Image 1 (cartoon, helix red, strand yellow):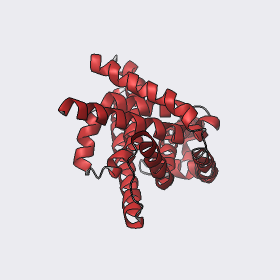
Image 2 (cartoon, one colour):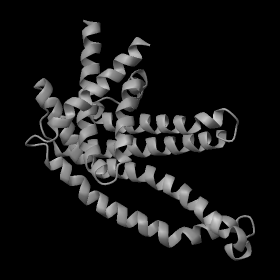
Image 3 (cartoon, rainbow, N blue to C red):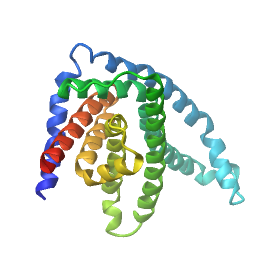
Length: 254
């Protein structure tokens, strides 16, 4: 229980310290980058949803031998339900797409935070940068697929009494863990950890990882301003948390 509150405290403290830090000279540029990414992504996702919803619904109904024209009474309800499900799917996809597209820049930001906090520098290497970007893309894609599979399972369990009441909360916590994982993996890639070691570290520090992702998740619920601040703020905070946890681990080993 003590470790739970200690990890939670480290994450909250890191976000508090990261807030003024991201407005300092040299950090503000990372707030402008998400705007361009969001404009492109939102335009594409809105067009995709609005123009293809009926076609997708007809495709799904076709598997069962129906089409929208034969289900006029229920077609409106079906479209609404599918739009809600698509909105849920697209919102998750949107967050991961942002993390993937911003990966090269957020990696530099995380490195800048570590250099400022510890004095450690990492010599620039184009080949290594490309490896790190590919790793970030792979990690986020894996996490997205794992999150979707487990979320679908939790939605199915939502129809079971009592468990159904907890299902939305469990989904929020699950998504927060995987988002926190992606935000804190920049440290693991810089420390040259392989996937196995990274996975073990994330699981052993799951409270801190989840709380970092939870605040990122909550920020994303605030349109526009939350979307702009969330990536840089969370990467700075996530880097601080990872450094604090590693510092504590090294102290315990000493």
